[in-house]
Length: 303
Image (cartoon, rainbow, N blue to C red; front, side):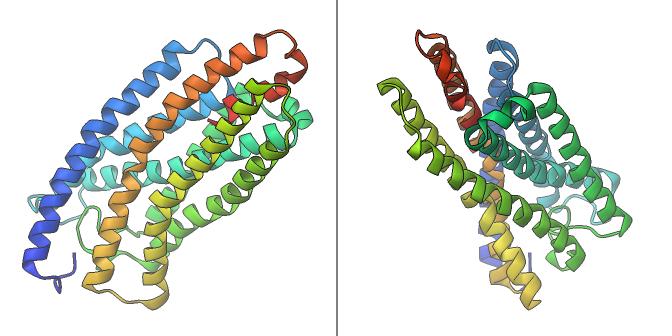
């Protein structure tokens, strides 16, 4: 961090980082490993949402596995040069941060297609196509990092604890990786919630399922905004003003750690996804719901 920060504040911030990252690593590994086990081994049928969730849990786990290297870099014992270990750990960290953002957006688009365009959904949605979308996103996100490397830019502050090394071109990559998905996710989520509110219910069970689905959409959107928006607002402010001070560097540090908490919050949603999947399956298999099967699958797509 910037040397203009008081030494006492720096020491306190460093201790808080160690404790926070240690807690995040332990909790995140447990929750995401459990989520992967449930998603891969306990659910009977592969769905589009299940494919996206497996990829999201994998991305979260990969990001979490870079945290020990982050802690090592923060101790000051790590080399200050661009070592291969530093570059690899930083690359995995950045790829999986923006892969998580991209996958959450893909899930929102999948929900939107299922709810607003159910006739097209039969043709556009399938586990195979969801897998193809995930593969394309992995290539796109990793390719953008490869381009960043080709430009010989590094996102400082992760490996080196030196925000001055962060090149403006690197910041632009980060901002595009967030604001473009946000511009897709926000209208898709709002339209899904609006469609759920207007949907006629065939019974009390279907009405309650729609309400739970709407609450899940709102919760997912809130987690996304709370975790990722503050960091990118700070990055935008620093890029626009060109300022670098203790206050800005501190805000960048804090908001970056808030964004890492998304790894644990995603895992909480996996539980509700599995629960909604089971309830939707039971609902769809009940008498008189055959005509509502596309609506009954709603719970699967919104979790």
